Amino acid sequence: MTLGHSFESVLEAAKLGADWAWAVLYGDIAGPVMGFFRSRGVADPEEAAGDVFFELARELVDFEGNEESFRTFVFVIAYGRHLTENRYSNRRLRTVLADQVLDRLQSSSEVMGAVPVLEVRDEVRRAFEILTPEQRDVLSLRIVAGLSVDQVAEVLNRGVKTVKNLQRRGMARVHAQIPSEAAPA
Amino acid sequence: MRSETALHKGMWSELIDRDLDLLIDGIQSFSDDLAPLEPFVNSLGSLDDTAPSAEFLELHAAEAAAAAQTPQAAIAGTGLTARRRLALSLSRRVTAGAASLMMILGMTGVAWASDSAVPGDWNYVIDRALEVIGIGAGGAEERIQELALIAESGHPRGAELASQTGQDPTTAPNNPVVVPNDQVVGTENAAATIADITPGSQRANDVRGAVSTLVAYLSNTEAADRPTISELVQKFKKSHGSSGSNRPEVNPGEEHRPEQRGRPAEPGKP
Image (cartoon, rainbow over all chains, first blue to last red; front, side, top):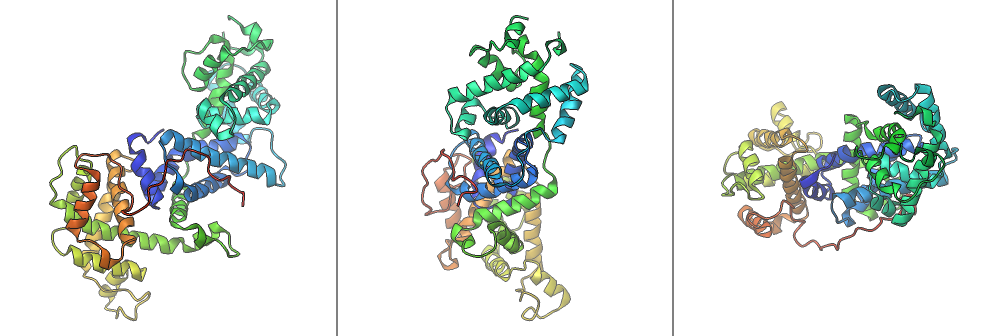
């Protein structure tokens, strides 16, 4: 979902501290932000998203740009929050998908009828586990956050070509974990 | 299957990038070779489906709004965390903000109700919305002063409550200021009308954006320095043109900030 033409006025009002504007921004982007944290195994995605918006509120006054650059801006903060948690948390970094992720994977495969439920669940989990952290970052930002390759490159402070390589290699690894006989005809 | 075997052998070339982008972006024209990846992409992509709860939205939106209004220096230097300090001051900010909103709605309702904006003007939606509000003509300056006093008292309902109970306002809780009951009700109706405009719509955002800008302008302007209503409206309209963009003006006199598309300071770092 995007705000389109109303983005500018919402942004200006948010800069002035209007609750309603923050509610609009939140409603628009909180889902992808929390989804990003879920996909990266963050223990409390809502709390992490709250931290992101708090930081965003402090930084927003210096932001100028369109809606696309705003989303990039938000995920720069979200990614920083993710790195901070990894760096300073005493918790062991979770390298598997959260249970709720697996539940979704299960229900999705049931609907699609592509492969047996448990097989997809295990295969996808295994596939995500074997990805490098950089590949997980790229795939999470591309697929869950819905960012373009260029936006991901800006969030990760990497080159576009590097992001494409990480995306390709990550998807190749996932693909390799899916048995060929399980693929739909 | 053009290259399924090749893919399973790890023979991924840069040629596959385009198809990967199509798959990830949800465009159905990607290569059949990538079909086995579709459940994975769909499942991972569905992680953003969970909409935040209304309670979550309200709490964090208010917190973010308060943070946006708080100078960095004001939240530094004590033992409490910034978020905790903001939480402690949030209710006061919300109260003051509500009173300010009522104040500006009262003013703009009178000012713009007689305006001649036409469909297509950037402020036409504001004119129409404020006509709907129907605050009534006359007494705008007085209302501004009264509502400013209410805002300063930190108790926007205090005056009305005091008038209903017969309590001496000078000894009432929060020392509320007495104002005529109908004006309190009128401005509250105005706020309710704005709130009833479909949230998220273009019209609502335009109206709210402009009102918020004016609220901020008034809050940053000493009463003695405030222009009259007609001056303010003319100034505001002149800065936007009669059919200019939807973008509300930033506070008059505020420095223009150069465009920044760079990275913000990394969160968590001191």
